[in-house]
Image 1 (tube, rainbow, N blue to C red):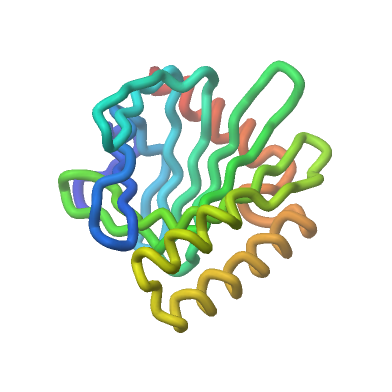
Image 2 (cartoon, helix red, strand yellow; image 1 turned 90 degrees about the vertical axis):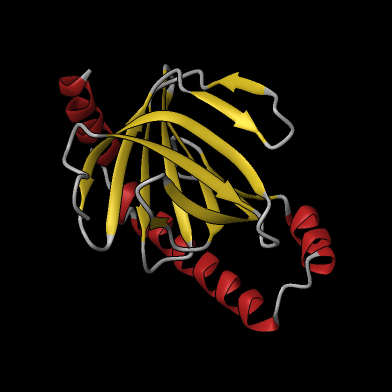
Length: 175
């Protein structure tokens, strides 16, 4: 992935299964990039919703994206610990414009004590009907949800102790 050296700026764009743009995160910093994954940091980043509304993230975040896994993970550094927001999504692609993925609605919120909650199952079921998700996509998403939950329980990957803190220290060197 030429041009994605640590410290490079990048935009993040999420889409829905029907191809509609869902959400855009403004400038974020690439912390690590290789052919399989990307780690990105941001803080007080402007986010634009599909209807044009904007909001700004409240805290620093370290984002983990992969080309093989159907999820991405956002570790948010708050005063009382690290919270994770995990999107069940397509693997990402990068096309010189932005890092892009399809958001499939299912989310997992992980608390600092590593307990977690599955969110938005109703939204997923609604969009599965409206956008006619193929059965194979449904199976892939739930299989990857199980894989993600194993990572959470095993403190693996972006859930490993010190992962977010170490990458946040790197992020601070580029600011």
